[in-house]
Length: 256
Image (cartoon, rainbow, N blue to C red):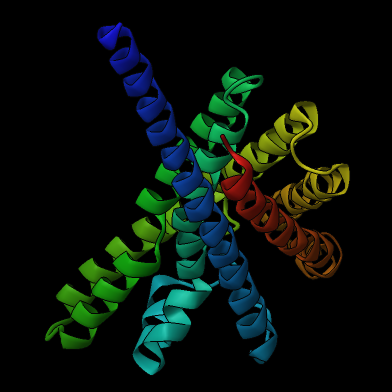
């Protein structure tokens, strides 16, 4: 009898411990969603605060070195350092959304998270921001033309594989949008998040995917794509982050 009571008590403690773990993950995911939202708000604010829209793929490595030497933060920002902050912040969001759908949509939520992880790995490993900063510092200290030529060639190689909205960065960027659309569809099927929240995500991230495609492969339409697909998709994505954060906070109090 005592053994049975102890077993039931132990099982109850295990369930309570598991509930606490999920609740904690939901809270972390909610805070991370807000962090991702503010990273995007800062990105937009800095973009509109500039004197011109950056036309990607048109600057040489030497031109970027000059940008970094004039204002290192402007160089990092223009080459997507805030996208890295956003991707890192989104990682706990995907884990939290997987946890929320673990009972009914676990496989699909896991697939969306895997696509996101691939996107994050490709984008961060290839991103040109920090490598260009390092190379620009070395370029400024170079004492001979041969050293500068070597550093410039290295910079061109970095840009070829990691400058935003060029073919080199396309896979990382587009997979991020695909993952966001996929997890929004999982949310639609799961019924845990409101339909408004879900459709805002599906439409918003679809617009951002279209912006990425046009900005990368039809640079002549960059400005139009930015103000239509990019701006509308970005505003919808900001709303999605806020609604997801609110719902995750709610789940952290309701779970169990």
